[in-house]
Image (cartoon, rainbow, N blue to C red; front, side):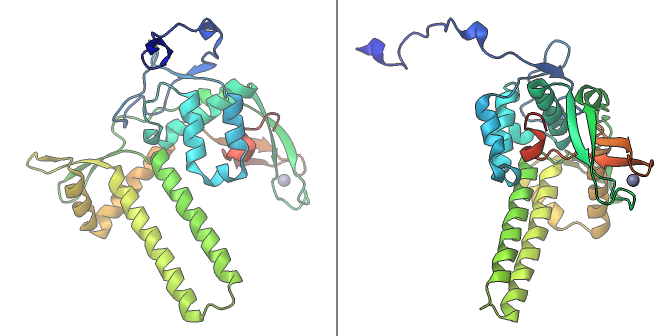
Length: 294
Ligand SMILES: [Zn+2]
């Protein structure tokens, strides 16, 4: 009976394996694989394979909650990028690239967008434009190796990583819960003014706490002027808690520098109604960005 047990049965090659979906495209990542503790497996040319979405992936993204649910994005990215060992570690800039590549390989290069300039002439009307996802991918600017290294006035050198997918989903979840709580409070007529103030303060405090945790998570290594390198998470956490305002600002500023690299999400269009050029940020909202023919 042993041979009936799938665990002990000798694996039979599936004759359908050669018909499984194949990588739809290969892209270079803005991080070039830096900032991952378990780096992605790249092709010989240093590129990441991105597969088209499966029917199941599309269903996951069609759930209206997907927008507020980092887990949905993680699940789909893990499916289309099997060569990334831990999707939680994907830096924000890499994620943008992956999402565009995923959309392109699933639905083609052209993407239709409805956008609005909001000028008086447009009277609130939208206009349709077509964006070439291939040209957005080609706009890649890799993150230079010196970005993320900060020397503070105390002589300490800090190595930072960009915010990653895990950070983004924590932030989304917090924002979503706060929004729900605010709605519930507004509907609850029994709450006193004191209660409302107390709840608002608690929410504010937990946002501040999360911001500090996210910043701490971005500190990979701290080196003292005499050459001691600290990577112990507890030591780093205590150090960040005791940092002066100016140093925290300096770290925040360096984290923002990461956003200057990656793909260019902005599209410039001439307004149909007033003739002025204007810019739109392509938002990768899962409920619209990943539906065919949108
Ligand atoms: Zn206009």
